[in-house]
Image (cartoon, rainbow, N blue to C red; front, side, top):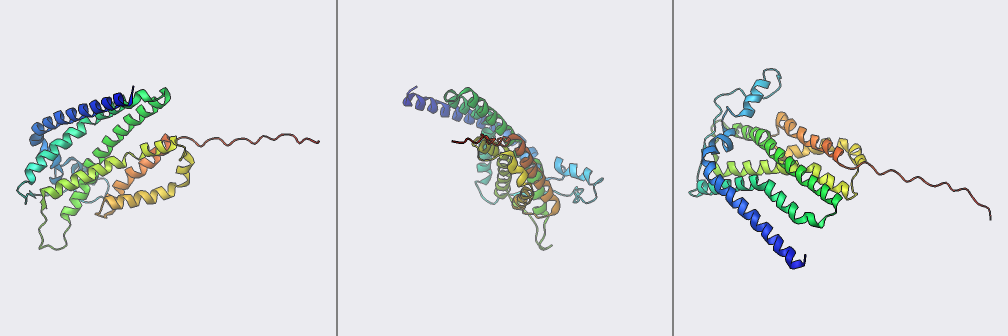
Length: 269
């Protein structure tokens, strides 16, 4: 194919992706009003599944924070005239993008695969599939663990009893999107290390050498992600980040064998 043929194929790839995102965004526009309270705003109520799980776990693990309060219910307010409508639009679009990711990856794969050798195509296909799965898992961890724990701590924190905590809709949605996206990207760590390994920059010995540093780094990353600072939230976020480090150690290449020096017999002229 000529350069212009490639450009035309790329143009149609982009068009098909935009059509798919637009179609699923319309579907999201229809569905979002029915799931907004039960899914997106669910962490504001004490009956959220994560709070119930830790409440049950607290019966057997004494040092867990108290999640047993049934009175936890946060009222979210709107202080701008257009915020609710814009949230409706942005959430519908986010729904469309999220559920179009498999199709987007397929379209990208279909565009670049003819230019790859068979062994390269197999590796890239694996990377696309693995990266997509890990991103979804990261988003789920962000939704069910990271965001609820941070949200509950910050909304119940009191500098003074005379101050009543309320939260605006745009503040809630901003933190909701940010934390879930951050966790989705953090879970791409194994894929990044796999790519670096294929470039010959990192091997398995790197993970053995810097394992202790990884523990400290995971703790620091968790401290940045979880501004609450309570030990329980810090531990819960640190654990999956460090687990990603260990998973990365299995997906990278082993150290290349050292070349044996050839011991040639000395010759006498």
